[in-house]
Image (cartoon, rainbow, N blue to C red):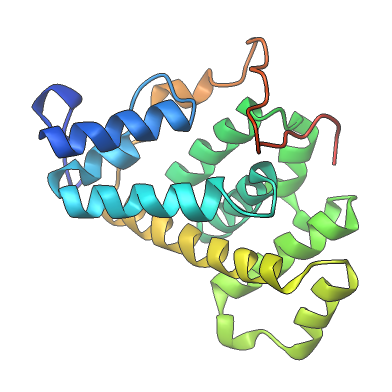
Length: 202
């Protein structure tokens, strides 16, 4: 049973409705998910969270699908059922193969792509205990070809994933039913300008 109720679109204030519309349309959801509707009680929080999603997750130098992989790995490691389900759905919608998702959920060390495995492992370590990061951890990222700007994005994704996990777990929101169908048996949507999609197994 959720600790905080959702605010459905019809009962939301105009400011919150604007956030809902931007959130679900730009994230390619069929409707606003519980994650943002739970925050609809506070227009400030809802807008702030959406700005984080848009700036930290969707935009940037690192492809969104790779950031979604990071999100899944951290959420799964922290036991956040809601965020794990939500971002597996996002990955499917972006064309990430099921085998890759299984590797992320079951054992990130089984991810065959060295660069993706390295950034994901770094992000999980950062989320667990950022003070445990060493010069060797940063050196490994640079050796794989990550620029300083990308390293900052990885750290920001770690922080954002923890932020989202806390909101989802503290409110005990229910995973949306739509997560089970997103990306399944649907024609892939054309890639938008600036968006990169995983076409093959990583």
